[in-house]
Length: 249
Length: 340
Image 1 (spheres, rainbow over the protein chains, first blue to last red):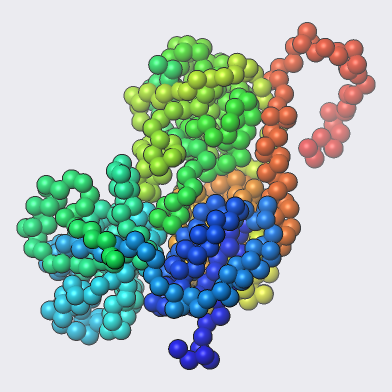
Image 2 (image 1 turned 180 degrees about the horizontal axis):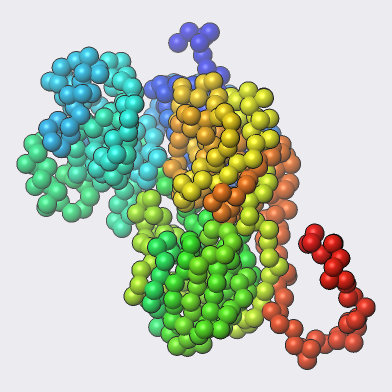
């Protein structure tokens, strides 16, 4: 990366609820890695004042009661941590998992694959290949509980959101836009295009693992038939949707 | 079992508490009662912890039967209430004897009313909280026939009241600058402060749309920003320049810029503003906001001290002779009465 384009991390207050440290002004892989690594490093220091933390696409958020703790003091302390290493070069966290999630692409269950391929300027077969060969990373969980934003697809997939919202796309749907794929935690209106359908449940509130995915995990989709998806939906009741999990060394 | 049996119930009645924290990283917002002050008021009236679960009611409440003697408190948006047909004062605690029927609703002022019970509701805990989170499918709305269990009541006092708060008709709401405030031009921010907004009917526990006349409040870079964390009270400006105040069940992240964030202590005023009521936003600095919030937090914690008996029986007043019973009379036509 050239020095003159390097983003200088920003430390900002978020209402009186906490402090945000941002590593980029667009959703890049390096900014996302930096956010995940920085959040992990601060969490490891166990500051009393931090009640919880999270990472978003390009930022780390620390929930700190700013009516009790002075923002300027916290900002100084976070700036201190920022100087300890090059966060954009930090490794991904330990204990990550690789998820293999079966899904149907195209057809009645995922009716916008062809449209998404057209928007990307490629054929449907190439779109399918891209979606099933890419090792995508969980960039962040958000919007809805356990819902992953997965990236990053190649530049050709930098397709915009639709102008009009699709009124309802079902839970388990794979939707694509802006080089990312999202797996919906629940039925949702969306401007992203519905390219695949899984039976993977991102949020399992009654189970032992309510939130199966974590930022930094990797996801690979495999193609199954609509008939196989119907079988999984009828027979697999644990929310996994036939997905497998393998710990990455 | 100590419980209240639900005979009839309105469409938006749900069990709430102060919500669940610790799941932001997983995409789950805190949720919980829309008016957290009302939860503290109920706790003060029953002299119990604000962590006790309550019923949140929108528009109308329902008909409830006590299966044992139960203490209750009624707070938040004022609704009509009767115990076995006799009017029960709002913003007060009462005894509902075993077998008695409590009828609540409709709303007379404000938006969210609360029914508290001595010992708190002890419905199932999910992820550390009893709060119903409708948008995430945690818990379900209360329906007729439900039997809501109640915990052990360690208190026995009822018939207390609290001074009525002013938060039920809109008004001025203080906001602090937040992470994207500087993305808005200074004159846009000034115009935002000078605008009188009206609460739109399109409002729920996720967010409340604010209507105004004149042009919107767009930031030049608005459509290009990356999605960022959302906290309750954030005022998000959508693509057409309309502000939405994000409430307890908002998403955890959002891509529209935030012009500012409502102080947590002023958020109940936004939650309670009835449809069409006027609201104004006033910027305070982060330091001022922190000081205001700290004072409010202390006041909420000390609400018990503000409770007073509903009807003062002269026999209960130990220092009766020290009261000046006549000299304090004022003219009923004195204009100053209208200022209260």
